[in-house]
Image (cartoon, rainbow, N blue to C red; front, side):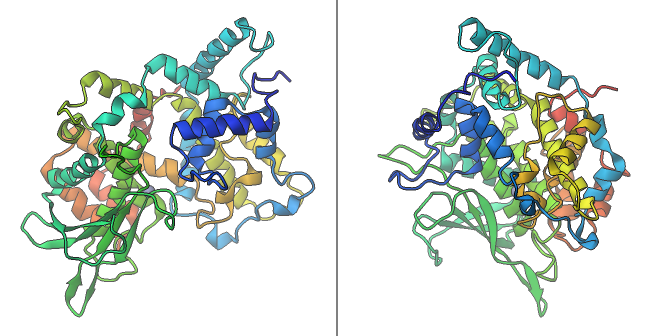
Length: 480
Ligand SMILES: [Zn+2]
């Protein structure tokens, strides 16, 4: 087996370099050094920044493998096997269309960078890209190809401006109006509250924003309902929703500046918040975001797309000196967005399929998990340079956290959201008022009170979701 340049790196050196890079990039909140939370982002950052040793990569992929077969997930009972879209995905076999040439090209690009390292004497002659190399070399290719440095875009994304941007988005689409509330009870001084009103002045609800990290707050970003929308004795109780993030605090009079990922996250979570705010149901058990997870993700992902629409960027992506984010940076941002799309899509697809297929097993007696994974990869024709994004041995989604047999929902929601967004694009105006109101009435007001696929069909006029917009937006070409 040929090994990458990081193979000989000791665990300590890896940890040192990780800490150095993490501090430099402000990934870690805990400055005390006694403990640290490795979020998924940090983990990915670790792999991308320093590469991962072969040994560690193998260990990560086979955590409970040696003699602890009992730690493998157990298949579900048949009546809980799949969420809504799982059977659809399996039946339609849309993933088989995913054999696109992007994947090969991306591996060739990475090999070219690795060849430079070989020439420079950093790697033994004949080294080739292996599964543990891709994140490291993908990052090297991204830097070389797009020359997009986050420090260039950050000055345009001040936290307050980004929040105003997402408020403006709802005004453009639905005519919503916001009024800052100064006299409401809040649970922390950094939380801000806004009254949200419809275009005709009627009350929609209250939105709270809670954007900074603190001791007692967990990491990540999310939306939550403090008060669910419902109708009680004929009275429409309007919701109270919170939009949460963990962004860098303003320091020494300097504003909080967001990375592109964080802008996307804030808009994503606000998509869920909007789903909660605009609810028009009777019962709280089906109102707001009570529906299927893949269905709920559609609206937050559509909100993400809108964050980077040039017409909206022109309103909120403005630096301290009043400069608007220029077209060159926007196009580089868009190009970089699809970097390694073939590899990432393939890795996600394999994990989704392994999860679904594993949960279709009647029993795991005598099933070798490694062999099982290998067979799934073989069936789809995955190149040897890739492995699933998650290995069965550490793949919590397969059995816990409410995501059981539901890993496919990330991709599936994207298929649905791209199809829905393409309806706006075909109309020629992604802010079209009439279509936006139809979208609001069809989806955002309904919660889980109606069958989502029925609503999908009534909005699009199509019989079933179309995979093409998904491929197009990921910059993938399908081999016919
Ligand atoms: Zn979400």
